[in-house]
Image 1 (cartoon, helix red, strand yellow):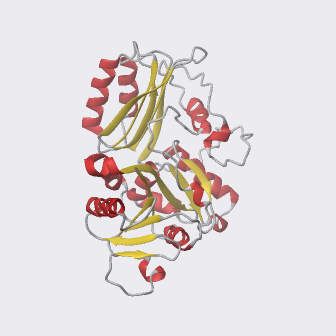
Image 2 (cartoon, helix red, strand yellow; image 1 turned 90 degrees about the vertical axis):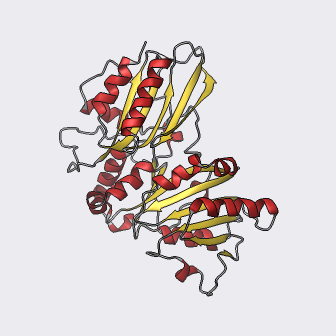
Image 3 (cartoon, one colour; image 1 turned 180 degrees about the vertical axis):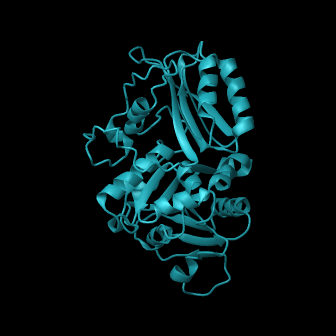
Amino acid sequence: MIPVTILTGFLGSGKTTLLKRILNDQHGMKIAVIENEFGEENIDNEILVQETNEQIIQMSNGCICCTIRGDLARALEDLADRKKAGTLNFDRVVIETTGLANPGPVAQTFFMDNAIADAFLLDAIITLVDAKHANHQLDEHEVVQRQVGFADRLFITKSDLVDAAALEALKHRLVHMNPRAAIKVVNFGDADIKEIFDLRGFNLNSKLEIDPDFLAEDDHDHAHDHGHDHAHDDDHDHATCGHDHSHDHEHGHNHANHHHAHHDDKIKSFVFRSDRAFDPNRLEDFLGGILQIYGERLLRYKGVLYMKGVDRKVVFQGVHQMMGSDLAAKWQPIEKKNSKMVFIGIELPQDLIIDGLTACLV
């Protein structure tokens, strides 16, 4: 299967700079870049000086660039056919969405169309966030909040234009919107190309990475303990978190004044944990109902579940109404069986969902 990376971020966040690197660097990878644009910001002018009517242009470093104003699904099928026929050689695809676009429908393309689901593997959604303008953009444009909510990895660009306190406050805000995504500060598109690919953010694996600071804060901020005792033994060591927190976790988060000018973001996330097993039928019914009613407002959700009568971990994740689940590794005798779920969405009824999940426990 051909891995696909979706690159998103608001106007001016640095997508073009990053793409120029991908299309000009001697990284030795054969990458097909699809610009899924609507004529508002066009890298062709900067990169592809030669005027040409050919839809697909070969770059000097072996990459391929094509601009799509029409149907993404058709373009992907065309690429897959050409690769199969041997007329095009590439190993992976990067899709750049327009800065004004919600990445949801692009991600859904990979779930809905069988031909595409068979040929391509959605690797990750990467969102670029402009450190200087992000707070204003997040306040003004819901689409920017969606871009953050969908991300598997967040790259903060232009950090040299803000001070350390502002950068820390921005990270804090982003973590509250999306604790699933590793956050990394990068300079002018010099992100290590390897950090962009093979993130497997869409894999149904049993590793659910959630920023441990977020969980700790969750405990302080919300005294209401929904019977899912928060004795979280964060089993993912910080090394695997990809978080480049570089501030050594010694900040004891003085919660009295730590409310960083609270932005009331529409997009929020919350975590559900329990040491009690789920009743599989009740959970399926409840999640089915939630997806039906709130599917459009659910951006991303993922979980590792402890199910009654199942000796293996059950993993699930989804985008909007599209949910997939799978059996993962067996529970080891030394492991404490528990469920962890994270939901990221727009004005979700957190209490209703948490109470409903609690009611599905055995």
